[in-house]
Length: 547
Ligand SMILES: Nc1nc2c(ncn2[C@@H]2O[C@H](COP(=O)(O)OP(=O)(O)OP(=O)(O)O)[C@@H](O)[C@H]2O)c(=O)[nH]1
Ligand SMILES: [Mg+2]
View: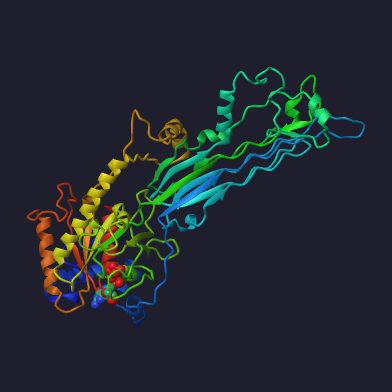
């Protein structure tokens, strides 16, 4: 679908540069505004009629800001719950002096799930928690009562999180391996004492004396068991790219199974076993989480261009604004709300999965200077965040020199970043497995086998490479800010003329690449400090996101 706005005259152009607009476009922009303001009052009306309160919100003193807690990386260790112990108990009833065993099994430990959800914008909650533990299963009880299951833990992450496994300790797998190595030696090397008796695994009746232990006949130690659910867990090494909101959580680590109660060990010779087994230990996985897709729209601009002011104008963000370069030192994310806060969307836009689009997010990153790729300024590491943004908005300050040169220089830095990134990926041989969530239960059942295979990490026969979409192929547009300042009109005109040439393919694309986004690129003049033209950016962005 093409962008909703007319590509031709910028709506606010009459406001800022009356002579740029013909009578037709004036008529058009009036009707556009009528329709927008009816549909989306909060966006359009705010944009045209700044109030005093807004003006101070948009032109705040440098001390008026709120620090966003933001983390795009986190290392966490998840501990699946251990199983509860089995119970040693015997039936006691009137006239039954020594009843049969009736100890219940231990409950299994809690599971750890992960789910990418819309609405989360940062990993800061996880970055503060190094260890995440699911609940331990409760011990079994007498009268054949099994122990309760441990509590599950659901880790919610923002859409666009990449999860990689660093380390894993799986006690059940370790025990299996030990058994394999010690196969044939089960009766001890010299064939004497039974090895199967191990304090670690067995739970003994408290009243058992050392003599009882010496004479007791312990059955063969049961094999380490895994819960049936562990079949559905993501096979290690975990490597997930959660690039879509997930309908259902994904099982990262299944809880360990509980121990067996004493009725399991009844034999002809031992009718009343005085032992049960302990629950298995839960596995522990250390994961590295990295948030790559920060926002739907990434603002790219030189320092002091007015990006944070724009973010304040479009959202409720309280990003720091200052009249000097590098006011912003770490990304700010703002959410543009497109509904009436009662779940009724104010536009016809939809998310990729068909749900009405009620919001989109914008990332304001620190400014890029010329030669940022040579590590000047704050470097280009922040471009990582716009790399995956769906739409790029180049913010150009019309009062700070030639706008066309600024735009070309920004594209140049973006291009350099991309070249470095591709090189780095090649060197690391980084392999990502694309994981796609199921659409329905039927889908999940139908694809069960494939999912387990696909999630099991890259195989050497068919290595899966990450799909890199070139930044130049992303939808983009230009936001020309500070249009309220004097003598910015010529600069804007030349910028528009340049983009017209690019659109007509008479001028090379500013990225210098051949495979580029083919649609029409528009420059929108705004005055963020007064809130002029901001509504149009919202409209234009929705059009591009729907495209
Ligand atoms: N006249 C005018 N001034 C603006 C406008 N937008 C921003 N400014 C001013 O420009 C200065 C820089 O604005 P910021 O929003 O901090 O710029 P930035 O791009 O976030 O800067 P860095 O974070 O340093 O990269 C502030 O003094 C703003 O008040 C505008 O539309 N018109
Ligand atoms: Mg800023």
